[in-house]
Image 1 (tube, rainbow, N blue to C red):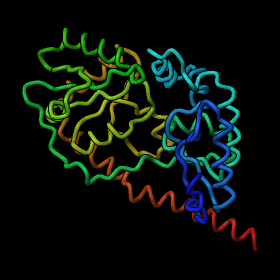
Image 2 (image 1 turned 180 degrees about the vertical axis):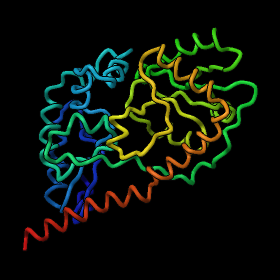
Image 3 (image 1 turned 180 degrees about the horizontal axis):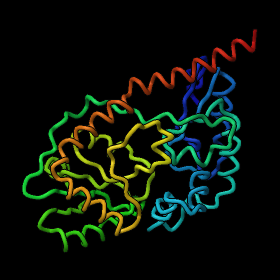
Length: 302
């Protein structure tokens, strides 16, 4: 707070992290938030990333994203978000304090949907000019690639599916599961990949998937109908997968059987990101929310 004079007089403050000072001592977070709220007109919290409420909601559910939370715990001796009553209490206070909580994902909407400050989802913004499109041409075999080693993304299911597919469809596909590659090697691999297998545990696809779609790659990942509807997608070219080896295999077989459509689907993926996630359009949605709230506040004062 040494430069607190720089944090005053704004129409809008948009914050990303509910515990930007300390997750060990949640009460410390109240100090900057109280200051920001007192010295600015409106304060919002972006719904992105893991928090105690989000972890608690999904870990105790029986829905798909539960597997992500279970994977998050793998290898951890302690999780700061699990059964943390102090963090839960602080986040509850914060959600009631801000003028709006704006989720970017279905996964970040559901745990907070009953709060009055929770707004509709504003989709993830992507700059479509940062990657050039290249026609997704299949050569001898369709190349499938999974580059994560995180159990959050269901790597064990994907790896098992790759092994099964290699045994039965090795003549039609190449199934590569490799992570922590040197950057140049990684980029060469992505360049010759036809299908990126991203995440088996989510309802939605995030930045890695969108970037790959801009390049013309097919994506296997989160594309659950309930999330698609909430995002306002008329159609979604992403191939939805679940934490189930047989379902992942069936999806890859479907792609193999549609080999002649891969280039067309890849182009459709590029167009999808440009239509639904263009950063300029998304920025305008935030501006519309802020302006509507500010105008409402001014009218109430009058």
